[in-house]
Image 1 (cartoon, rainbow, N blue to C red):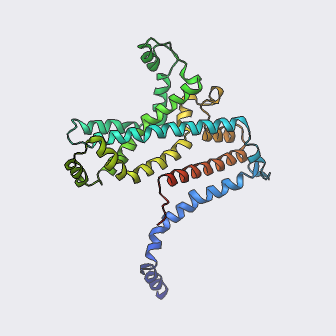
Image 2: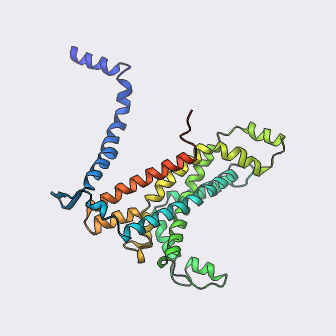
Image 3: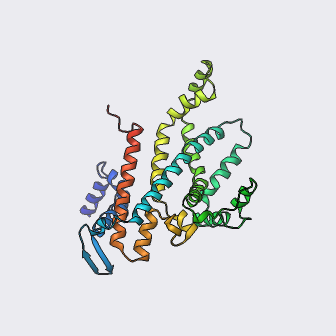
Length: 299
C-alpha cells in the first residue's frame, strides 16, 4: 500500500507531470520518425533480396545513383517544386487579401469553394484532370485551346505539357489550404497600421507591400517550408496521371523513383539510398530558404 501511495505521489509531483503529458509525443516520435530514418539509413548500405536475405554492400547503392533516371527524377522534382512555389505563394496571398475584405459580396462562398479541392481525394481529382488532359479534341483543355484556333495537344506525353498537368493539379488542390494560412495571418495584423497608412495617403499597393507582406513574413516562411516538402515528396499527382511508368519518365519524381525501384524492381536498399538523398535535399533547400528569409538572424 505504501508503494502505491509513493508511486501516486511521484506521478502527481510537479516534476513528473510534464513528462507524462509529453510521453505520447516522445513515443510517437521514436516509433514513427526516428526509427524509420535510422532503419532507412542502414538499409541504404544493404542489398535486400528478400526477408532475411540481407548483405551489406557499403556505398554501392549511392554510387548507383549516378544514372540518367536519377538525374531525370532530380530535374522533375526541382522543376515541379519551383513552379508550384512560384504559384502557391503569391496567388493564395492575393486571394486571401481579397477574401479578407468584408465588403466583398459572397466571400464566404468563395472561401468554401476554394477550399473544397483540399477535401477531395487526389486520385479522384487526378482522374478528372486525366480526362480533362485527354488527347481527344473534345477533352476539356483541348477544347479550350481550340477556341483560339490551336490544334489538340497530347498533354500527358510531352515533357513540359506533362509538367504543366501536374502543376495545375497541385495548384487546384492546395490553393485553398494556403489561402486559409494567409487568412489566419491577416487576422493578426492590427487595423491601426492600415489606418495610419490611410492618413499618410498610402494607396492599396503601398499598404500591401509595406504592411501586409512584411507582417505575413512568418506565415510566408511556413507556407514556403511546407511547399518545399510537398513539392519534393510529390507522388500521388504523378501516379494519378500515369499509374505506372510515364512516357520518357516525364512524371518520374524522386518519390516515384523510390516507389518504382522498391516495389517494381524489389531493390529496397537502392530505394532507401534514394530516400536518404531526398531527405538531405529537402533539409538543404529548406535551410537555404530559411536563411534567405532571415530566419537565422544573429542577435
